[in-house]
Length: 251
Length: 300
Image 1: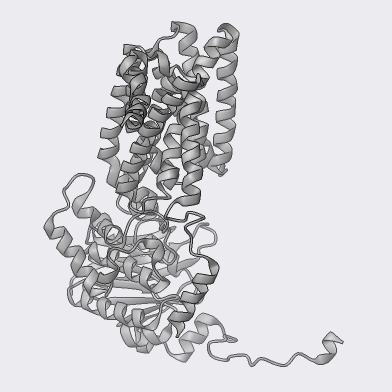
Image 2: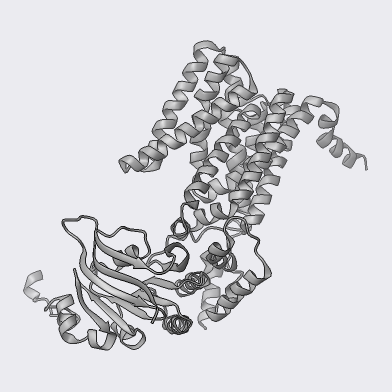
């Protein structure tokens, strides 16, 4: 299998004395999918930021066998898009062609076809002329995803791509991710829904201050590992029943 | 059709008859060509008031040039450009270094700059000079000033075309653009240069106080009528040029000061747009009752 990237003994965070995450090592192969799982603050987003080159690791090594600027596409958890800006969906999605077009090159028929194809795939062709501020949350996530797909990257980094998105959109996006992988795109995604990880991601990296487990998703996401990541009293495993407040408290 | 003919001559005669009116119209129209598109981006980036601050910031440069070289359009342009860019860069750098918001650092620098400018002019010049700088001399544009306006506007349009894609993406999603390299920073810097250059060009005709009106107001008006960026850019330019023509007529017939007349014509246009504009105009908005009716229908 062709290796796309390798991470060795990575430590990340803002303060070298207190790294958010340390001792992380893994390799990414072409067409593979890796889910990053862990409680809030486990360092999933930070790891994605380091992988895409927006942040330097505190220690460790990060080796790519691709061009990070050209070949990595990133979908942030909360996008900073100014949705009141007066462009329509087609124009917005076209910005995913930046690597092909840059400042100068002309927008040709072939580019238009690429944009149309990705809009069709994500079922948003009928929204092509809508303005960004007319879209619902799910529709906008599809639009963002369309732009990310248009980059034709070799490594796709997704930060909680299914948060606050309707089920139809989730299953559509998962199908598209699977087809991207078949075409050789590697996918790394921070996901909090363990069911999605179990059913759709080959490998899983469980994080909580350090790498707790790495391997096939079904083997990693077992009760012991989850307990270790979320702590023994985790609500994941032992949901605390809601107790009735004693009436005397308000008396 | 004598009435129609009268109206026609009312609207066009001053420009046919008087050369200074033709020159003023040409200067202001050329100015609109450069400034209005830049204004659209200022508005869309929520930097409308930054434009105003920058208009004040150019004053000491222009004033210093005036003290050294007299009323030389070229010297005042270069001085203004230098002062404006210096304030913009200092404000940006201070904000980044001290982790302060850019609006506070810009406010501090432009106020200092403005005070210095007024001090310099009042130290040597007469009140008439101060008025010229503050309110412009649209009706007395000489060849040098007109050439400067033309060169600035055309250069500004060319430069805007060059960085257009990067500027749009920088406004829309700067984080995304930055993932492709430093193009966003370059686009932002070029944009600042364009803002300052157009304001400097504007102050020859309209004065430092009013130049920003021709930049921002057409964009604000167009936003009530047009949805797409392309239409906004074209519409703002046409609105700006039309306001210049209307303002010049008002100033001609009623003996009013020129640049405030132009900006007031725009302000009236803005109020009308707020009321009547098909996009978000107050009177064109569907009433609450009809909205709830349509919602009910959807539910049913």
